[in-house]
Length: 537
Image 1: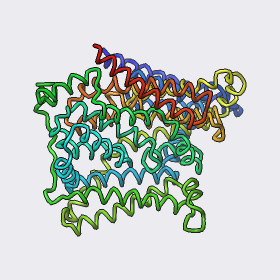
Image 2 (image 1 turned 90 degrees about the vertical axis):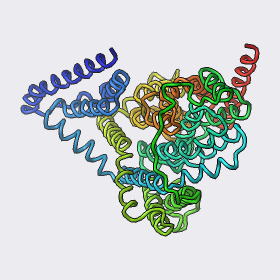
Image 3 (image 1 turned 45 degrees about the vertical axis):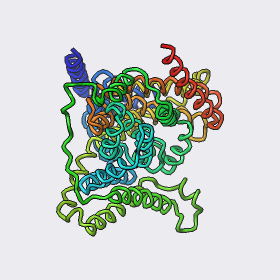
Image 4 (image 1 turned 90 degrees about the horizontal axis):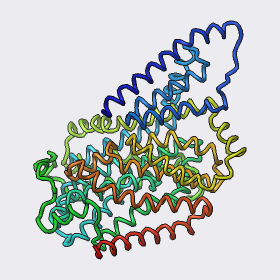
């Protein structure tokens, strides 16, 4: 029934676009006589492309076509329904201009190199070697869970990189300590996007920065980190769960079966599901650790280089004023070369295997590249229609009365959108430009709202069964996907509820060192209450 509804809705949307295009005949005839002013500029219509993209994404749960239809709608409005003007604006001023932008292209190169790095590390056998090393030293369930969390935090460069590495590394360790696959997949998922969204040196930081005015993106991202309550509280929750042995919801059943019966799956039909991974037997722990360390160091050096550190600028000023696109691109490129040479010298991979890994890495990043391209293009459409100016004027004129509640409202909207579409990046592209139109970059409440947008997008992506990271976390832990989603939802919703309360407070007191401790205390208090309730039951 859902498929049929989505099909009908897409058909209706397509028909509406056809009628709109047919209407360009009248518009063209009118413009032949005299130029017509764009009545859609700086009006409610400037938001229609984003509204259509959101609406289609929520109903169809398909982000690519939804974003493109939003882009096409923006082109129609910008050109006053002129056919030639629409095509020119959509492709030349939208898609092509976004891809031709040097900042955006640097981010895409960074993503491709990350994909190649992941492919190389998997082939070299570093992940498997680390798993064998860790399993001989970790002697408790709490230790295995904390080690999984620590590794997830260490691999903060990219969520794909995280999921593709942590699962294969920690699976044998978790199995030895009788940790259910559902719990392992939760730990993998909770240390993927929630970690990347608070790491300044990551593909997520680069993507978020790309939606902000050039030169200010990374600075805004760093300022928003302490207000990213969902990501921070998720980390707190994982640690508390590991140390207190607290489990609730469907996860409790899975963990009980694993401890008492040795049943890691709690699902007879899917016990035979396995991922066939080829690991180089020559791989060592250093083959995983060294490339990650080099990547972090090189990216930091690249970022301060782009900020003028080697020309006399102080470290702090260079880092805050750096070009994230250039820094991450240069750092990752140098790391890739070093990694290739290192694997050749170690003889864990030959030249042919290394070259085969490069296109594999590109293929792995195609979905992210497509989402980013469409999101950037949609931003270009709304900018050309004056959406920022319209929303800013609307808020200044009538919305200041509820401005303090906007962080909580933005958080909920982002949660819902990311859950329905399964993507954080598409949500960033739609909501961040509109959020920045409400508040200037210098407004503390604007920083809170941007952070709420990022936190909500990660929360929705974390919960969504159609999210790439959710699916990869299930695959990395070799856990049935439905089991992973069902057991993870109560945990994610608990953190989301506490985060919502924190954003209400932050709307009135936008000071992170006041609100964040309160949010952490509230999170721990909720978990203690759940544990006490479970004991009484």
